[in-house]
Image 1 (cartoon, rainbow, N blue to C red):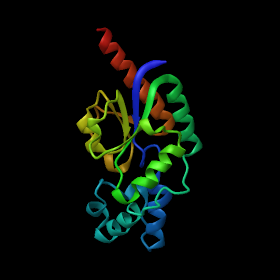
Image 2: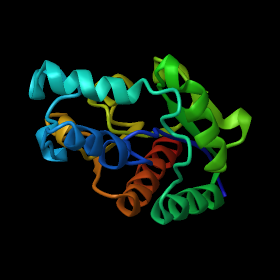
Image 3: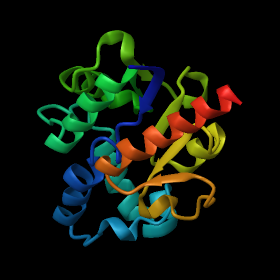
Length: 187
């Protein structure tokens, strides 16, 4: 087991919240929005104020994560990372309205109380590698410690960042980031 802390973001990284909850709500409201239409983290900028208003109403539901579970692929990733590294933590930025629902979801996903970090600034949390979809967060963390999970809204991030295209690919890319850090320590 490698003595490293691996941090995972939840929304649109480990758990496809937009695909499973937000986009269906937009379709029900008459907006045919697809994932590739979301080209910026700010929905209003790429899709307009009405779409953002509906999306935000979904994100602010107090029960947002109730009854939802991780996919088999996400569970396999977590199991593998937990076998390989000393600690795997959840680092996520909730809305106040759904923080309790999100916390319960993280616990259902097998994260212990001590391994759940809810915060607005992920750079304040101690970890060796972070898997996240938000370009601004990865830019703040830096290419040595951040693996960006590929999404349409982060494709303009510098090519110096390691990019994961699936959860299976994320495991490989996290492993490479850890290996680079171990080599740096030995040099």
